[in-house]
Image: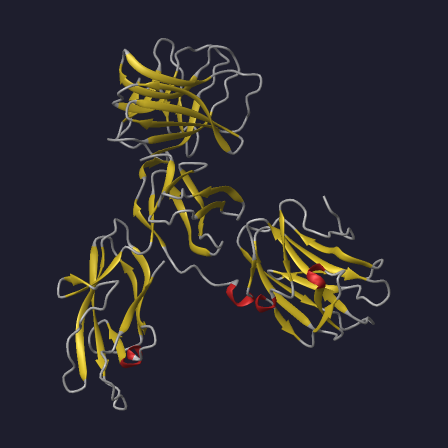
Length: 504
């Protein structure tokens, strides 16, 4: 692997090089920059500057960047400033005379787009400064700096909620069946339910299994110290037919909370236990279950430990389902700190993908990138296994009981005395509410119609944009559009405009 000061005539494996001169339309130069041409340079040329405080800006995608330059002792700056995403560092080109030298490297960035700005020093003596080329990781590219911070232009909205049941055991939910009924305590430890061993009966905490395919996750504090002390998940049909996925004594057992996961597909049950931050597959079995929950096996030897349950989560699956994507979209899952947990590719013939979550309840971010590696959709949320998110919007604009056409113009009628008021309705057919909804009029292609239109929630106060804090699930809200003819307009063509929807 190359280090600072090494000559890189061509990019290393896994990297791709962008020459500065052919890509000058992607680079924003400030100050006086000149063209230097010589066969020793990459692409036989580069731009250089002799001006203190001159700068350049360029965007790039991917986690890494390398700067390639000509070095020379004595006439190059020692402390050139480089700023990536607001973080300032310095580098030098004041080295032994060489060409195509690695003078700066940055790694460990996110997979998205980044902005780099390079500024020559104003407080030291030097003769010239150059950048010959930029290396980024394969599959990534240079981007014009004005496009780096473009916000995603498509939303991800929740179509179906995967959460079915969640219990933090601050109290006893009446849906639980506990047997024997005197073998538990809600007061022994705040925020936990404690199952205590009995001499001759297994202790069970059960709840009716929801219909369809489900997943159950149990977070518990239970570390058996001796052989025979066992507890864990139970999938229950009747006293004679059940599946038990048990924790037992192990010299390698951790003192941290135990987490168990079971997922169903029809009668098939797959079992997992969490090791470090991920669930590892353990076993499978088949059963047509009626109840699910936790079991603590019988026995009252002194070293036997009670089983303290912190949380139980039940969802409609253990994966996050993304729909209405495009073939070859790339989907990145990040945790709440921004660390990448997985990178997933939509199949070339598919428009959806299912992503494993590290927990049935997970706080994080989903990012969707197109084939040009541009971020097209992003969602920060508390996700649950089984959640279904669609790319697009769940909202419809309706006029006279018909949805406005989103591909061809909808005829709004003729103006009378130079104006027309049209009553419309925005409908949310989604199963969850839409928040921070904004509706406005925007220009349609090169037509001027949007300058004629105003919008209102009451047909009295006319503005350019209306805001609706919350549009509840399966609800609607009326609004009005006022179109007023510009007296200076003498054209004969129909006036066209778009209705723009934005929401969280």
